Image 1 (tube, rainbow, N blue to C red):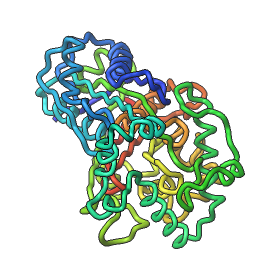
Image 2 (image 1 turned 180 degrees about the vertical axis):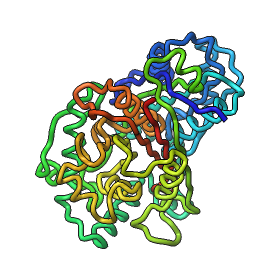
Image 3 (image 1 turned 180 degrees about the horizontal axis):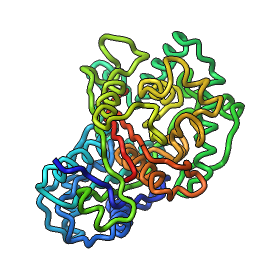
Image 4 (image 1 turned 90 degrees about the horizontal axis):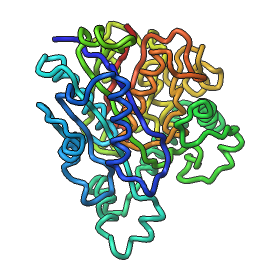
Length: 394
């Protein structure tokens, strides 16, 4: 099996773009990634993507439409859906094709565009099927009670974690402050104005204990990645980044688990362990990580499941600056989901973009000095499944 390298990355700004289309966003990210890779579009033999939103109709055959628009005949084409982990699953699919030698160059992209709350409310009378579609994302039990957001599920997890580990609200509120500081250095971020712990705790309570500033926005955006073999990369790319470790694990649950500890995410731990073993590293070797944290409390819990900190110690670690550049491990230097923004299908590739930028030394004001080993993590459901990649500069 050949080792696989990332030779090109591209992404759009993250925000709410009501007049944009998923195709337009996707094309912009793809053009940037292909130009970054320095390849001709006709060199691309595989195009792998994801759906373009959770609550959209008439958006079918996404990969086929993109290939037609770009004028690229391919040997492999797929659209992969596994919730929030989809674009990392797509990356794994393409990487396996390259590693096996069937193709030499692959393109993975994801574009996410969703109806805003205002649009949903305005269209409710005529498009009730969209509300039913949103409701159908959840389990057969929860959906009977009109659940159209995962927030209540996550809030219960965080409540339990705070109780078991003695974590205070002020400690959790410290994380959005750090993420916003990171985002202030990222020109693509949705929110860049710095905030304080007091701002977080005084923001609207959404679902106890989650405040508005501890919750990610639903955003629009797109990102793309170009892959090839390490041998090819060494000939065409000055700073290739190699995929050295991969891990994946899924629990036998969808959102609320039917058994087990609600304040633990075993799939994250299992996927991280597999990725570390494949890369022949430990968690302490990671210089920079992008973690799929859609709520502040849950993000802290994932830091611990990934092995960066002991159980219950992540909040204090963040307060002490151990997740900043120069600390134990720099986490979510992009601003994370809370400040960069969260376009679920594209988010994992936003993470790849950030880690590749860091490992190349191209992250500007948010650059982590000497970063050589990076980690990307994404999840689906209420962290019912997790995918982890280890990336290394060569």
